[in-house]
Length: 119
Image (cartoon, rainbow, N blue to C red; front, side, top):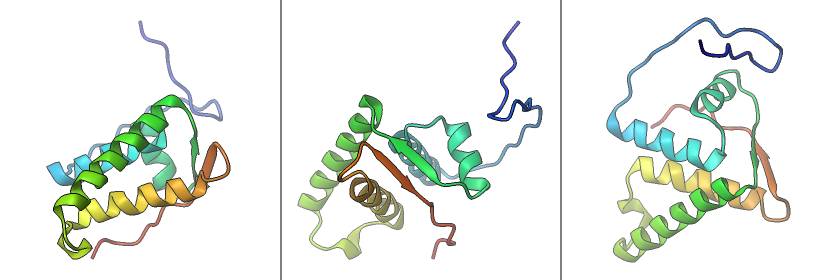
């Protein structure tokens, strides 16, 4: 039998929610979760209840950050203008830049995620 998982306040999570994403939205979500170092469940709950996302500097986060920076370095070599990038790519780039700026002097980044609707 599996161990029951409780939240930080000792409450048992017995409710399940499901929703659909496009493949592009799923890619953005997975990239942001990897950069946060959190589990997907914890990331989504923190985002839904408008909590600050706290990113602790650890090897997993640094590896994800390195992979994203390499991805954008290659993308920028192929792209002449930021206007050519898709909205999803710009969204992840903005997240990466916020993370790098917040972690500039510390091994911890704390920032609110934007709840603005996509244009």
